[in-house]
Image (cartoon, rainbow, N blue to C red; front, side, top):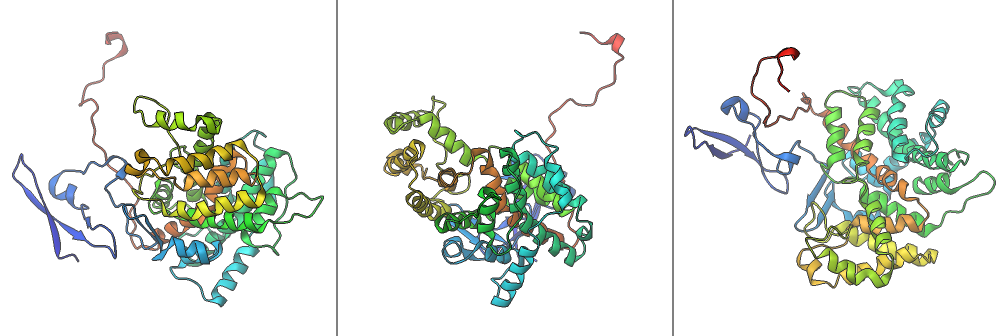
Length: 432
């Protein structure tokens, strides 16, 4: 129990209430308001939960002021430099980096689950060819619960683990097939001789008529992108997964809910918005004018991919992915006017006092969109790529929540501002 308390005073009644204060291992302390309504008949009001800790978690820590991102205590810079996506998956799921034997066993389990039930292929034929890939992802991932009945007991640790491994393993297959379906190309089956990222690239861009050779620079950049997107604390989609999970819903339904939330342009669509902005800028010669427009509060034009809701410093993920961005462009020798606009915009903005003083540095979405476009990922697949990386974070938070004893169902309250009680009036007596 906490020895520290916060005292809340009410000016109208003079009543005071003491609320316990808890400290985390690092980061801000929290005021425990769980008994506030019972003791005072008051709720708190915090639209968007910007100042509310909705749960206790040991998975990810962010310090937006200092530009710090930790997975289970490990700096994102170290993981992106030295780790692999699957090793990060193990870390997020189990809390520690694996030994060699543990990792070999985990990797083998993921590899053996990469195929999906053959009947699931028929699901794709139910969609229009021009269906958005995220619509397909929501439907197909949610439908996994109709095919894998043997791992739906959320109170069974073995079932939870099997479901977690299945989701991590099958997501690349499901995502790549959503792309192949739109292209009218045959679905490829996973190749268990390949690594996680290499297998996904083959599923996306390979064809049965010839062998597919993975570009190691592209694979490395995509691996880093998955690591950087693996988790980001209690964002909208992760909170959605936890909220859905608090009802006792199966993990496939919960992750499908997370995918649906990520689809929102304010959450997972930022890198797509960056490319739309670059297309609007058009050419290098228009950059100066667009920067001046972005500085004008009366002009609706905004530079997308700069600044972040949480980070008030340089996004640590952006520093990492910026290097990969330039590596990919150099390795592929891409000649794309839009990419040239992006590079010159980045260079110009980093020197502008307006952006520096407001800490509007390029963020991870600015660079990720450039990388994805350069390697041939269509814009409507950008959010799918985000979902691929974030899947393990969603699952880790779901598993952490389910293991907590007596987890209450999520039930936010509200400040009601509608009509006060009134009597029903028959239609004949209502005045128009």
